[in-house]
Amino acid sequence: MFYIWLINSEKGMFSKSCQYAINAMIFLAAMPADQERVGLKEIAQGIDSPLAFTAKVLQILVKANLLVSIKGPHGGFQIEDRVRKLPLGQVVQAIDGDAVFTSCALGRHECSDSFPCPGHYVFKPIRDQLTGLMTTTTIEDLAIGIRIGMAHLNGEVNTY
Amino acid sequence: MFYIWLINSEKGMFSKSCQYAINAMIFLAAMPADQERVGLKEIAQGIDSPLAFTAKVLQILVKANLLVSIKGPHGGFQIEDRVRKLPLGQVVQAIDGDAVFTSCALGRHECSDSFPCPGHYVFKPIRDQLTGLMTTTTIEDLAIGIRIGMAHLNGEVNTY
DNA sequence: TTAATAAAAGATAATTTTGTCCTTTAATAA
DNA sequence: TTATTAAAGGACAAAATTATCTTTTATTAA
Image (tube, rainbow over the protein chains, first blue to last red):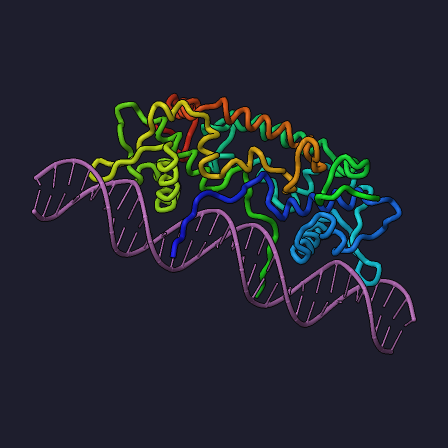
């Protein structure tokens, strides 16, 4: 019996929930215009994410008015044009909150320009750049890469 | 009985373990030169982190040759000059691994310049800036802020 | 040599995040 | 109206992360 703990497996910028959310939004935004509603199954396959868990994430997005869902036959999810034009940051915001944009990188609760942690002025420009890109880049912007076949979302090249 | 899950409480750039590690390293690096060894208790108080957990994190740092520890009376931890001059990234590396520097922001396993995820070229500059700052900024650099009383680590102004 | 001190190591617990399964609700079409 | 479809919601379960407690080991000083 050993209970070794080495290092944190893999800690990216966003939570997995958030990654699934972003992927799903881009996937939907990249769908051809005539493809009105996309079912959960197709979404989960398209971004290869766990189906049931993805359902939970999508529920949050629906409540946040970032997605529309329709029940019943031929139901599914769809993204409105209004939302396609929204900055990516709003998706992150809806799932992870704004910690990644605002909170202190070193975890200090009180950390500001006037009362900074030792890393404050080092991390500030990074956070600023992140915030900037996340407010200027729209969901649609990222969907284009998929559409023109220059970006992938599930290991396969898309075939629309 | 309700099992509501809203959003991920607070997801910053680094894990808590990693934040404690960075804080501890800076705290030690900011210690006056004559203060040879610093005990666990003093460290945990200095960076207000949970003592027992911090001990575990420090153990990893010792194994990674980023700290020296001495047992017994007047024992404690100390940081070598060699290590003070190391880039902050090495501390992150030791605890969180290099996921934050290298892994795909959208969680795609295959993501590279030649086979990019939709967000690849948006997040690349951010990762690059992060990597850059984390390789050019040393532990010592951040300790200076504490020394000159311009940065804080525990809500209190230091009084060395 | 022994007692005291402090970190290392081992074991476990609590919390958060991620993941699944089953039932309910809403919508559609026969 | 009824059967079918698909999302919503509720209840758990598993895994990862964070946290604590106890025992062991190494060091120092009396």
